[in-house]
Image (cartoon, rainbow, N blue to C red; front, side, top):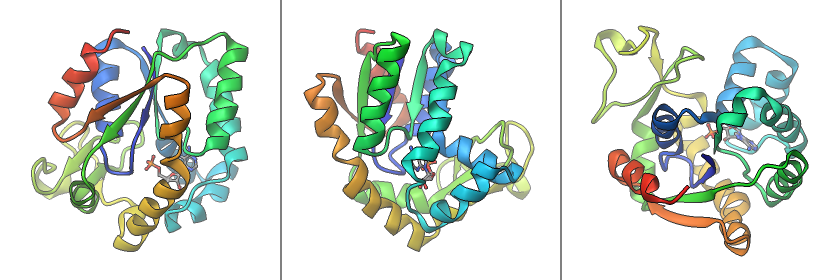
Length: 214
Ligand code: AMP
C-alpha cells in the first residue's frame, strides 16, 4: 500500500496509519514523529524545527523535503508506506511528485480523513501520547486512558500532553492547516487520487479504507 493520509490535526491520521501498518506491513512515516525524535535527541534538525513546532507553525519545506527524500529511499519503503502528516503544503506535494517519479513509485490513493471541527478540538485537547519515541502510542483521557500513574499500557513509559497541544498552539495549527494544507485536497483531486473518508470511529474508518481497491 502506498498512500498519503491527509486531514486536519486531530483527525486521526496517526491512529489510522498505525492500524493500516499493523494490518499490511506498510511503514508509517510521520514527519511529526521524525521531528519530535530529532528534538529529543538534540540534533541540528531538531534545534531548527523546535520553535516552529512549539508555536503550531510549519517547519520550512526545505528541511522537510531533505528528510523525506532520504526516508523514501530506505529499503523498508519497498513494502509500501503510509505518509502521515506529509505533504503539508502545495510545494511539498509538487516536490514529492517529482521524487516519486524519479524513484518510479506510484501512489495508490490520497485519503482525506474528515471530521467536524468540534470533534477535532475535543480530540486534540484530550489526546495524550506515550513519551517513548519508539512507541508513541496515542491515548485519550476520556475514552482511552493510559494505565495507573499515566503510564503507557504498551511500554510502561510516561504518557504526556504534547508541547503543541496547548489551546493556543492548537488554534494556530488549525489556522495553518486551513491556509496551507487544505488546498492539497484540490491538488490531489486534479491528480485523480483523492478519496474522502469519514473519521469518527477508528475501526469504521479503518474498515472503509480496507475496502478501497489497492
Ligand atoms: P503532527 O504530528 O503531524 O501534527 O506534526 C506536528 C508538527 O510538526 C506540526 O505542527 C509542524 O510544526 C511539524 N510538521 C510535521 N510535519 C510537517 C510537514 N510535512 N511540514 C512542515 N511541518 C511539519
